[in-house]
Amino acid sequence: MMRAKSSQLSFYGNHIYDRVIPETHFLKLLDKVVDFSFVNELCRDAYTPDFGRPAYEPEMMFKILFLQFLYDISDRRVEEEVNFNLVLKWFVGLTIDESPPDSSSLTRFRDRLGEERFVQIFNQIVELARGKSLISDRLSIVDSTHVKAKVDTFKIKGNPDASPDKDARYGYKTKQKPFFGYKAHASMDSDSELITKLETTPGNANDGKEFPRVIDSKANTVTADKAYDTNKNHRLLKRKRITSAIITKSNRKCHCLKRHQMKPEIIVAQRERPKVDR
Image (cartoon, rainbow, N blue to C red; front, side, top):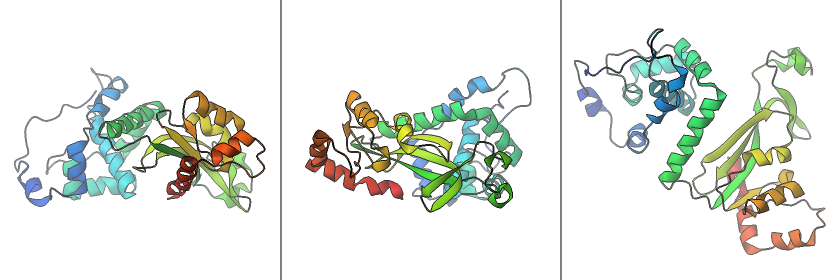
């Protein structure tokens, strides 16, 4: 069950927060434009209403995970930071003399959240960004990046089945640069540089084959590097009435596709593709 939010302020009220936290702080500005309370509704069915120990609100827990990602800190470190950093404590909704959830509570919340519910939260945040006109949908850039698994590759000696991470696989950044882990396939809005879709696969996944899962159907134009240049992907964009600005391979023989590549607007779109690298 969810613990009820206290209706009483701390003995100190919000006076210290108001005095110490400047209105120009990033988290203050974020709090004014993003209402994270939707997380409570999306997670309601993950809690039993009538029994069990009272749990912290999903909104608070998600905000802590957000801070952990934002500042790149561990579970134990974020617990300490939220407890002693007044800005973080205010942002997650704790009174000044309240203690934050412990690190084990974060682990349980991530397990409770699950992949499907996290995707729902991610999609809702993207729609909030669209509602604030942060995402233009003028041009979407598709690419993938490698994510190394946190395992000792020397011990597994090239055998993925010997790894404690059973989902990770060997892949290649380039022909000379192998890695063991995963690929994060993403669509990025070119104007805001916000990620609008994301899929994670083992490291040996083919980028071109993952394209249908990661394209943003609301984009007007999509560009990507040569790894995504297949007839299937070009046809898919055409069916969705999205302009294809996928960079074609040099051995392409389709004359109509070559003429399409020479259009000024396609050349301009392809020149924006390196934005996704950073």
